[in-house]
Image (cartoon, rainbow, N blue to C red; front, top):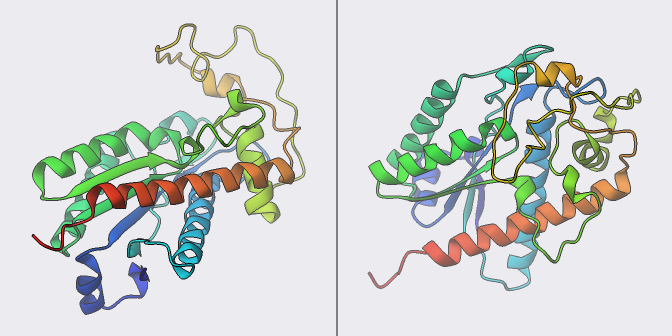
Length: 263
């Protein structure tokens, strides 16, 4: 396994690394996370999960495992967050974020990369990211994949409060931040009061429905659930499950897409 940080490579090193490596592009956001978490929570968390997954893969490679070469791209710190502008957010429209991803992915192909994995840290980016990956594979001779980090824990990673994952500025994200970046968690964690009628954006009235109702985020104060019970111990377990999940995803993507050296 060879690991490179794209920002620190020369152009010749970039070209040389592209041939068989998987390029990994993390994306986040800058948006309100209630009163106790910073605007860059999603960016910090996707960085933390990816950094620890790369460390885990390096350990596995040192122990003799077959791990692909990896190139880490700088994290895109802006995402699609218009639903959070009632408080504060720096947001890209869906067409603009899609175009930004299109151009970054096309640039990777022009540099010689043929395998790309996009790792997302913000729910508002998810559909846009997946469409960008689909478009990329239609117009370029590449294999591309996308995931949101919170989806990667498998059935063996049994967890408490799974109904609160991922949420927003609630128990899950606050627990993760207490484990990954505790200095960034403000001590004021107000209990989230129930509202009537209950919001629909994260708990639709029927499975399979996506429901959006005007003004919901502002009405619930910018959080999906109560963060008062979040703690670093749970956060460490939650974080570790996503780290191991992302490492497994990288290995599976590699196994399914590794170039045949005989061709």
